Image (cartoon, rainbow, N blue to C red; front, side, top):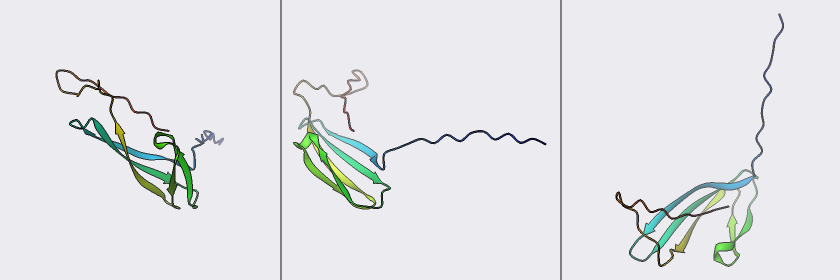
Amino acid sequence: MERHCRPHRAIATSPVWIEDAQVFPNVTDKKTLIKVRIGNITGRPGSGLDSRRGNQKVDWDEKGAQIELETVLPNDAQAWDEFHPNLQHLTSN
């Protein structure tokens, strides 16, 4: 009896990545608080640069890190409601 095996697919990922990002709006002050969890499978601490904060250094330990960022919304940003579902766009990488 002949056996057929399906080939396995491997997907390459970065050893340090954004595990989770949550955005909390402050409509009154036109700001957002962004809570980011960084994953790390290298087993070693490291660091990178946060270009949104003027290339400020961001450190993580051998397991990753949790950081908080604050962003200011544009003056013309409109709030979301059920009648006017305005969206704001945020890019992270």
